[in-house]
Image (cartoon, rainbow, N blue to C red; front, side):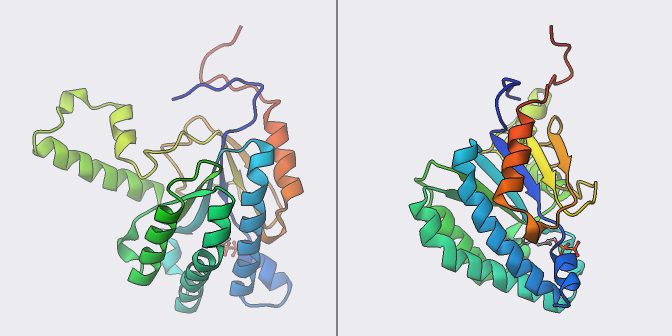
Length: 240
Ligand code: FPP
């Protein structure tokens, strides 16, 4: 785990984008209307990262539990993800954003997976904001998949089980290429982490705010990120 100077802002911010459904209901609209409004916010927040010094942004777009929603909502969200990738790809590339996806791709449809692969490839050479989109992602599922991969390596005689520690496991997680999040934000008033980055957020700060995701603005994001610099993070130690 990398230690961070307590006076600097968060290099890695993770966001649980909650409240799209309620936002739509308040307007007498279907839930998908809220998801579309939420997607527009994603665009705005990604663009604001360079000015705020946020190098890594990880967003929770679809969880392993979200399949339990109605078929209409799941299909609508999948179509929204396809559209978002298709429409945003060139802009993300031009803005030097490097996009990667985490989560289990096995349950996602082939067309969507192909678009995800293409966007990862297109932006592979970018080194501005690192945007990671969690799609069919669950923290426990991720740890289970990582453990399975590690167990295979042990079985094949390529890893000595006696050498396995936290760092070894982290290497098998979907997030092997990311530093741990410094700050996790959840919108819409729920104080839960809902299976998001369970392993990675062991030392993260949490910020739970009442704003519904489609109302989450660049200004609110800036206020939270700036406020973070005033916190003292001790990582279990006592600072002099
Ligand atoms: C939670 O709100 C939101 C989701 C499950 C989907 C998140 C998706 C987006 C913000 C759309 C765009 C994302 C990308 C990457 C283009 P909710 O439906 O649980 O709201 P509720 O709690 O009010 O019902």
